[in-house]
Length: 235
Image (cartoon, rainbow, N blue to C red):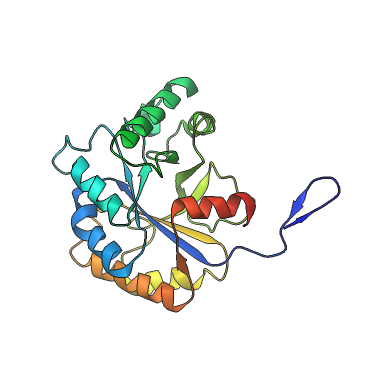
């Protein structure tokens, strides 16, 4: 990094090619389908968990499963406690902040000591501007549910863009290879939903093959925490 006389920072190199994979919601299939990939491929795929559902709704992971996944290399992120998005969310920034930090405290109580302050906004909220204001109060960075664009140094770390896998891009080996080929530099983030109908019995093998391809192309599979740090200071 070069620092000019006026204090402005100039980065003399682009980000290296990086990929982060985030499965939203904390569904049981993260434990059954994704955790084996994390263990076999040694990659830090993330689960963004909704506090009110973990250990309560049967289709979601239990806290014991979340803790096990975390201990085995999964990154666990904050997907809010209540998961209010779209037109549901008419709360003030202060009310949203309380919801975010409630999930953060819950995660800390279960030993999730990294990732609790990294936010994944719910549902591409129509109240996104207010949610971003709230996220500035506690989060080291936050991810949108949209974008379909690479993130580069200097990007807004409270509006990190993701590629919507299963919505805009199919679970298909050739589709994934094409996306990975676009990462000549910069940080690509995939949003997946193991809870969605697009995720099938074939999806884990397809995702596993994509990870192998990314590695063969020199694309690093990184944590959300690492990617945010690179956006922030380029180091």
